[in-house]
Amino acid sequence: MPAFRRDSTDDEFLRRQRELRRAPNPETMAFLERLQAATFRRPPTPRPPTYNTPESIKSIIPNATADDIAMLRQYLTEVDSSIRPPTAYEGLFHTTVQLHAGQLDAAVARFGRWPSPGVPPVFALMDVGHVNARTIRVPTTGDHVVLVDEELLKFVAQLSHTVALAFHAQPRNDNNALLSFLDVVLHYVMTGRVPDAQRARLPQPSEVLASTITQGAETFVLAHEYVHVLEGHLNDGRHDVTGVTDGRVSQSLWSVVQEGLADTIGLNLTIAVLGEAGHDMRFAYWGAELFLSANEIMLKAISQLRTGDETGMREHERHQHAIFDTRRQAMEYMMRNALQQASPDKSASEQRWPTIRGELHAVHDVLAHLWSELAPLLRISHARGARPSSVWEN
Image (cartoon, rainbow, N blue to C red; front, side, top):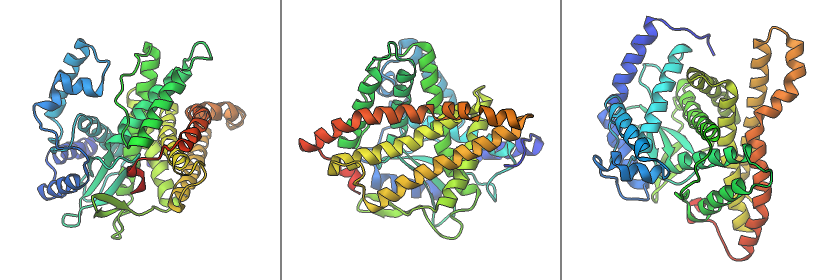
């Protein structure tokens, strides 16, 4: 990535970006709403006023207090004045995604990278049900639209909560993390929906940890897709999402090289965004690993319930699983190289690497352990007739 910079050109660029984000091309938005209408599994959400009511907020944040709700309502009202209005299909997560988009615009400007001719990708919500985000190009306008699945946002938030429980488990035989993991994965794989069950309020340090990991995961997912736009990966007419067939979005597979590039630059952008909030690069890496682990967990869980064996994946699922492992290794190499470049003492940095590496993979290691505990239960469930939701068969 180019070196960090900030000048009047960047400020002017960001001003234009904000204007374009508030009012995207109407033809692009009409295309987006047709796509959402064809794929959303629930009725449109009337907005306003449903979006910013205590009941709506409670449905997303069950543990919110009256003071929390009042502060959030005031905040959302202010935010709504500076981002594009949501479509009829976009709920409370719309604000989350648009805030991340604005943060990434600033990071892109600081690194001297922005789309040509300067039209930012439109970030929008989808309801296919998969742990995924994908980028398409609108046929008539050429604009890029990044589609973020609502279940992805719910899933990474639940996994972040579970990881925070595991990190701060006292005593060591505390089963809260495993029970949380079991609830979310089993429910998701069997119904195609992440459960909205009320979660226990965590101690303040754990709440902060869960929130920061969630922020890292969400930012990385959007940054990865933003890089596909910056690097022109769709400019040759290829589409990650090719259209809608029988109410489902069909997609092609990206090459490992393109995914690796999007991961590398996307992780840099995520580090920059979290750095603005005072978080070190470890949290960006944890967020990226949480997203990759979320995909791996669901691929194995689907296979386990479908066949009784986590390795019984279909060909395209095996391909995806292999790519996730390759992507993790590439990001580790990038982090190791970045730390060495930043250290005045290369030898000391290399000696510390085993310890640093263990810290970087802490989230992945926790989730791998929880999976080892959950897998036998899924095998038993399969033997008793449990099968994956039809969502995963499309």
